[in-house]
Length: 377
Image (cartoon, rainbow, N blue to C red):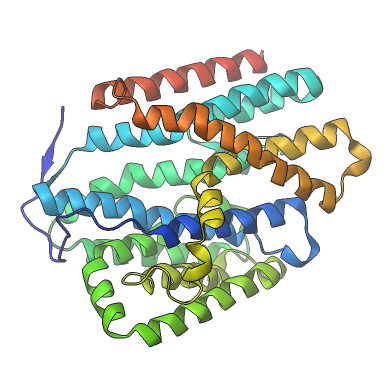
């Protein structure tokens, strides 16, 4: 089993496990809400796709936090163990939804079975974003897997880069993020879909969250000394993020415009370092909001297939109030998935080891890929 040792890094890395951030869990619910409004076609939420930007920042913050704490505690990162944790967390729910979506398509929309199967092949291989860029017909119920693919592709690169950077992780992260954002700005005017779906043009959003994790001790110290300022910053960031849900759908995106909601999400996280309930954090830490955040991943997985099949069954109701209602009801499926799949695997000692976690990930991928190839015929 490969274990990579790192002598030291130039930023202070926390050795102890930090306090749970309930506000970040609540912010996941906000990100999900933006996405649901956008995909339902709610008129005032044409920019609700910024919810994906928020998810990317949160992911960069949380995952990098785990990596730097391991570095700070042991001076090393066990890469196989990292990927085993990712496999246990991400793949089972994604695989179940993928297989059930293929079955639903075969039953309710057989004419789309082959196209959905091709999308499922790309999704199972964590390449859905690149498939979307090359596919002609996007009318399949798996298009939302593009963001999962971008995330997994980023985490093939970032842990290794963090290790190679050794003493200067912030420098490496800054260079990577600057290049990524620059590519997004340059590509958006003429190649908007590539800029939107491309991994290279999205890395900077993970990078901003990762920078927060690398600077966590300093950020926490600053916010503790300036509670009034940080509370006002959080309120301003919340307002900016809410406004982006309205205007972001009317401009070329992502490009320069994506910096606004992405930075707002980072400020909401960073300014809550010492007091998660400060400012709008009082809403984010509210238990119902946190509950929605806790099941946001499986809810995200289900919301597109749910609306797709609902419209297939009731085409005359293809309007935003109906679609939004279906998306909200999909939360029930998300809860069941969390209870029946995610939580048991998270608590299971049987798959807790690195080897079994990797085997689980490989098995889920094989089953998903097999079902997809069967659908393609």
